[in-house]
Amino acid sequence: THPGLVSGWVCLIQEYDGPCEAVVSLHACGGASDAALELAARRGVPFVVSPCCVGKLQRKPRLCWLHEALEASHPGVGAAAGVEGAFAILASCADASSAADAQIWARSGRAKLLVEQDRVAAACEAGGHCELLELGATDGAELCAFSEYH
Image 1: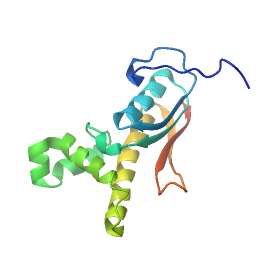
Image 2 (image 1 turned 180 degrees about the vertical axis):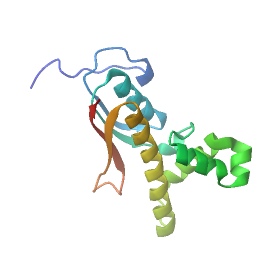
Image 3 (image 1 turned 135 degrees about the vertical axis):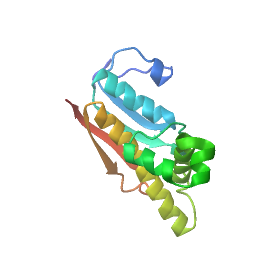
């Protein structure tokens, strides 16, 4: 192999300022996946991100249509908690993929798809070409994959 090509750092992703030729993020919990995508965008490097724990996301959606839909959705949710609260509920639903009930499991999958599409859109806005890929053997978990920055 090639010694020195891969090195490890212990810090928050947002605080990393060392060399970076690619970002690989496997099971970065909640907002850590967003931080990995933002690091790749700042550095203009390729990335592969396999998120987990999307129910821990605490932010507003980045897609305009999703923001508007959550704002106009359930009046109690929109008024009491705002769009960020409604997005947190959507993200929480996305984490219910271990549910035994087939209907709940299907809704969870749709919620996860929306959350991951929101992440991909944000990465594309930063100038990248991104794709959302399904990992076949992982109960429909998605992978955000990147090919190049413009």
